[in-house]
Length: 463
Ligand code: URP
Ligand code: ZN
Ligand code: ZN
Ligand code: ZN
Image 1 (cartoon, rainbow, N blue to C red):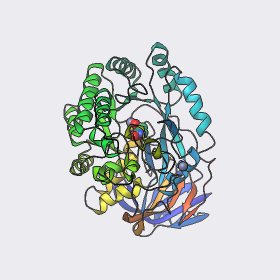
Image 2 (image 1 turned 180 degrees about the horizontal axis):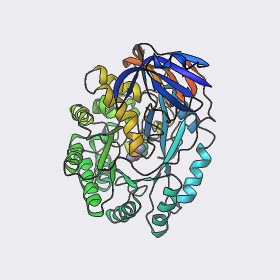
Image 3 (image 1 turned 90 degrees about the horizontal axis):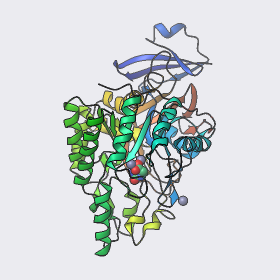
């Protein structure tokens, strides 16, 4: 099967150029001028005139059917990857979650059982390490050989995923030894739990307290501490879901010194704020995630970080919990609200809005949402670029189309949208996953057995 995508503006590291793309089977066979493409004789042509032709989105931070907060995140691998495809994301990297007392390898098996044969797009895994001991440190090597080359650790959630500084240091030494990456949830969980207990003791039970008891200082302190531990051990460090200007300053300083420190932010921190958490009737619970939504002024710093590459990646941290039957668990005590928000479907569109508003360039949109996550997590050039030999994960994007986000029309398995009523310019028109058209003009043609597991190399983005 040969498909020609004709007349579009191809976006990539070389800039934005009008070119035709030839897809043969699962791969990109050629990128050429329309004149050169005249003798291709394709079986099928997709007209992309006036549209962008870009590498499919890579969401390097999702949580499908994740056990958390006494329940499971509401999207399965099947529903979550289908929603991702609708929004122009053709790869996710999800997290296998080590429960304390269990091994990394049995955890990896368990996550393969959940995901294999149940994904509409390609997927990889990071490993959450919550139990640092001689066995799990040794197992990090086996994980890397099995294509899982990044390990998330938590300075938050004492008693659940939390690791001490000593445990983090040990895992970082192993990361240095193996060339793998430590991903860090950088919030001071010990101090946060004290603040939260004090708030409850004073009668503060509502969702807004979630943000008030996780101040930016406790994110920047943990970020700085993680950077110091990484410097001492020499480990590459990737700060996940960065939300606060002060934490960004820590990352920027380390990067200025040449340290291998990287960070991602998420659309919710660019577009939503603590004001959403103050909504009445328990509505604020819809926005409870960690780190929390911040005051609006942080947003300008985060956009600047995206421009300067102190923020290199945009991921969603997609971790949906239904408002009616899951967020409800924390009515009367904000500490029991399951932490997480939906978003996997709308990252590409929301970041395109940053292009429309003049916050980031077209090139930075593609870099932060596709090319850099591919490099950061060992998938390049198979993913993240429109080039001969790469997988034909391609989005035809209409930059002029209008849409309004709503839970009524989204495809994520959750009963609310964090962006309800947002009017956006730009919309996904066609999506190919490994050469197969999975979305075309408001119709889904994919299948939840199409996605394959991606065995990843080490980070390709180091200084
Ligand atoms: O609140 C969040 N972010 N939930 C997902 C788990 C995590 O910490 O990334
Ligand atoms: Zn986290
Ligand atoms: Zn997360
Ligand atoms: Zn539900």
